[in-house]
Length: 253
Image (cartoon, rainbow, N blue to C red):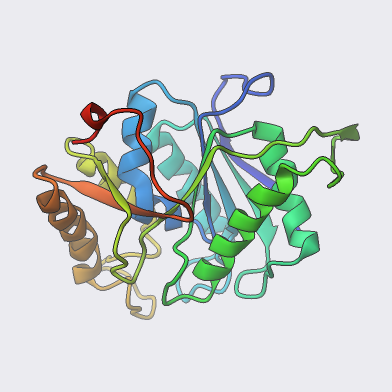
């Protein structure tokens, strides 16, 4: 496993809890699934980081090095605080103890209040694997008797308040929606940073399902359609492992 620091702002976060930590099995998963939500939360003053589990080295197009740079560029577009890559094996990482321990180290390092991660049911096998790995690791991270060290220092247990799964290839039924109206353009700009993966009429690379022009149209149209359901221009959907609650009916839109 190779742990790569892809991008970081000058802001120091080591002494406090981060608001949102988003995980993706591959670079671009987060942008596609919840990029608008992340941009919005950053603009609202929240601290946000992204952890990619793999470098996407099994992808038909591009190289790990190209995708490293693309993910750094996308991080800048979204304005997040940091991005790291755990260097797990694309396609072959597992939801087992060794991988869980590495994820737990990250959770305890940044102490997120909210974790966002892959869809629980999806076309790509890494997406549900990643969803279960992150969800299970969040639970285990809260157990005092699970011991981890970071830079030689014992870590304290930490369990995020909430774990939410963004929607990916399959049109899963969301448990709740986030209004991203006004942020959809920045979301699409972040996605387009991955020029090796998506539509490029000048590319000599083999065509894939996601490199077709209609794929990016689908991503944009999905947010428009989800927005329609709640009377706004654009929205992103999430599922939750537990019942969603609110302090007041006035907090609902």
